[in-house]
Length: 194
Image (cartoon, rainbow, N blue to C red):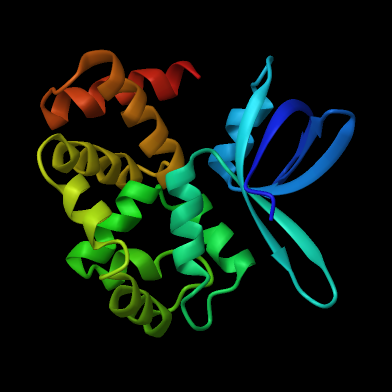
């Protein structure tokens, strides 16, 4: 199994990146968050990976963090969720927001992801609640509640959830714990400037 790549990004074309590791170019299907990170990389990068080998194909999936990869691995264990749908889900919803939705049983939030119906969302909640319960309950408390509310406010204004989560995360890193209103205002400034 290939669990991690460290090398130079050769190209990023939509959801596929090519990472040169010692002269070998690995083609990796990535989440939108990982694609954004890799597209702007100027130095050596680390991509956390999951390798899937079936009779007809071998595929390498890449993630921006080990936590995102672990969530992917939990998703593909759920009946009816394959690697492509799991990658689409992680590209549409930030991992911490998804974990919060699982912990709170928010089927409606999960079913907004393209390709995930209400029945599949319910199955995800039932099957993943125990698997990612620690991640979800640990991240829902304290400052994360304000972060989640800010992300949801930006989504309500029409921004994509993963982009909103990334920018709100940057604001939290820069300013620390601040009220939701300030998180939203600063995030809107950064998104408008981009």
